[in-house]
Length: 84
Image: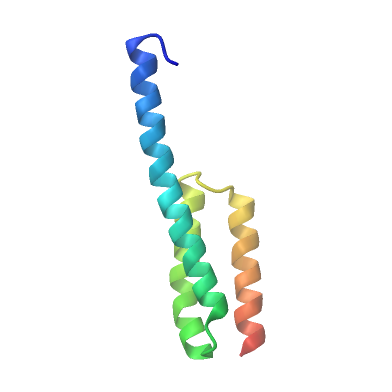
């Protein structure tokens, strides 16, 4: 465990940040699953922009890598446009 006051504070901050990042990553994954499982094409197209925005925010905040974000967006767009 951490020895110094600074190391203890850093550990607390890291734990708080990790929890924050896990929340937003899980929320985005749930939104992606909801989009993929939706049968209605018009609803898919409407929610596609929101999901892509969520993915971009994760990449901007370095929660996921920018290439992973790009791959996710590409896969989602292909799936939504193919179902139309």
